[in-house]
Length: 184
Image (cartoon, rainbow, N blue to C red; front, side, top):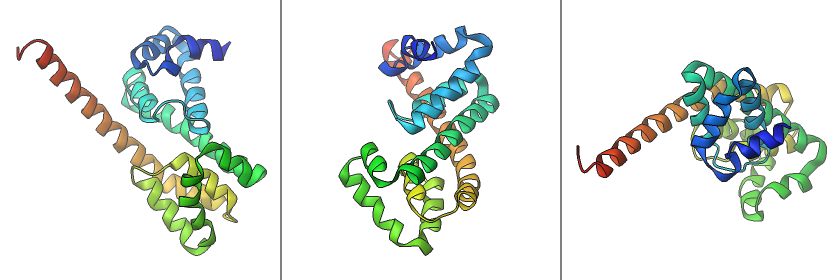
């Protein structure tokens, strides 16, 4: 039933507006569905991760949007860590290209530096955080240390990244309106 609701929402088509309207129509179930979608998005990305983050802030406001985004992304990150820990390299390889796997896999051998690298990757945009949670699961890093690194680096970065995207989306919308209306 949840899968049908997500499919009908336009989420898999990348239709953010239809997705937003579908969430709003669900009333009290919207936060639960949204968190579930974020969990799924982290484990198996369907569209760029920034889209659901933006939708969360637009639909639920900044505080709740951030909270629901963070809960869903955190649960998905924990699942990714444990999927890799329990099922190993073969599973992790099935989620990414050989090129991407090889690019980050060598960090596993640098156990002493891996934690610092992971912190930097979580704190800076542009890294494949979801995949790196899996890479962390392939290492001997304890879950406690993984979560410590995650909780110190991810929340602020997620908030700032989403706010920048919101401002950028607003700017693009304003520019499009000016262009369509001929400068009026």
